[in-house]
Amino acid sequence: MSARCVFFVGGTRSGKSGMAQRWAEAVAPQRLYLATCWAEDEEMARRVARHQDMRGAGWQCLEEPLNPAAALDRLFAAATQTGGVRASQTPSAVDGPTAPEGPDGPDGLAGPERPEMSECPGGTESAAPGVILLDCVSLWIANLLARDQGEEAILRKVSALGERLAAPPVPVAVVSAETGLGLVPMSPLGRAFNDVLGLANQELARVCHHVVFVSCGLPLALKGALPEELC
Image (tube, rainbow, N blue to C red; front, top):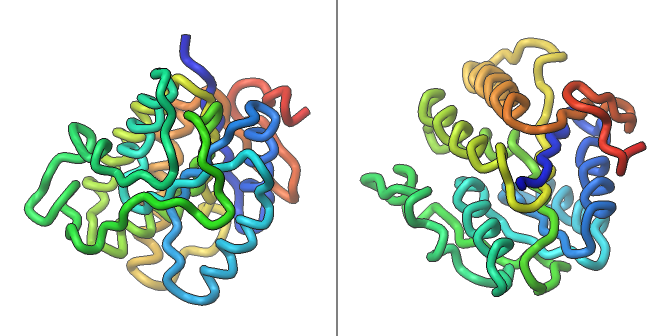
């Protein structure tokens, strides 16, 4: 029997990440934070540090800015076996069937630019996680667009991620931004981001068991009942 996948979506500073963390902490004592963020400047590094401060004991962390579906394959395999997975391991065991080699490396992304999974500061090494928090889809989409990935290629990756989330062996929380409530961006790249993220959110909402919209720190169930951990 598969576990639940809960999709948390909301605007900037809506409380969506905190709500997803609250849910994960209520679900299992061993939790893994799957981060898609690259801290490429001081401002982003401060954001990452703030998120790390929010997490307490019982968390381990993996960074995978370009291929979260492959990371989930590895984590799900660990969750269904007796052996655990440690956050400091490299992704060599992951980049198999789910990360086909393109001309420049996995998924056609330049090999040297693709980082290894690493242990995040403040993380803990433990057995296979009892719950996974993927934060966030919007930064992952931005990473792919920044590397000149087109809409069709990105949506194929989103579909691959959705296949993993449809029947996960452990509970999964997925966080994404809702960009469709603001002004239309002035730049072509900004408009492309809005378009692709909107389609990605629709696909993930279709496969996830629960969809929770977060505004002003309050949850609203869009699909399925509001998870009891949030009531």
